Length: 317
Image (cartoon, rainbow, N blue to C red):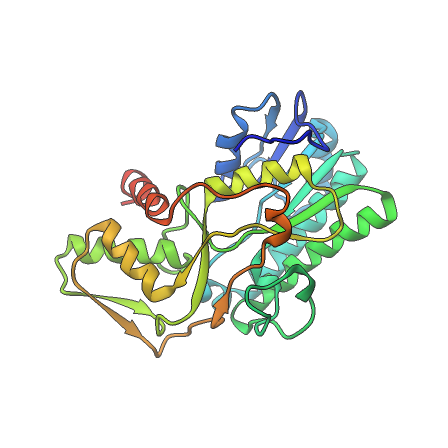
């Protein structure tokens, strides 16, 4: 999507750091920014450990980024969150604290912190508006990730308030696409279903098991649409309120599993294991404020799933 209004901030000629460039969102940002007149900065986890404050500040002082997309994070699905809570809270708190503080110290002009929809309460109104943040208990299965992401939002607000930094935050919901995590132990639902459907099809199984009842409702956003939204926000948004990114495609886990099976070509039965956790019964976002800025996604669920599956076949399977 091209920006129709004059932007508040221009990326033209800027040194832009994509923190977490090797991840799914970071890779999509790399693709999106290829068409922009900017210099892309990146550093692998071997070159720069974002959990180490001295390393981060020294790197930022040397490279002098002017705009930062803070997309680096430790991420995973229900099982990963449940079995590795210490990693999820420590890694994410350390990464965001070091990068946000380093951005202030090194004079970064603008920073966008990529939050997540898990920041909202388990019983948040659906779709969840931004102002329901911190109004109730979090979903226990991803509480540690949520607390870390809330801290990142609050850091952006605090540095904006105290130092006048143009730091913003936004949260998309359930992204998927090329570069997704397809590890059966810690992938999100789309990656996990694509792997299961591919294995069931390849082995000629009569049935495929899906975690949970299939009843929870979720919203899914193709990752290249997310990257386009983040670039749009970097240009057009400057406010201390976190902004929901959407709307994506809203459907139940059962409907998602059926669509994945169709895309992969698995024609067997779907068996839902209700003994496994469902997570939040409904998780969708109210993105009316973002929609009012004039952005909307362009990729249909089937097209996005097909591209994600093709990437899986070429790079993982």
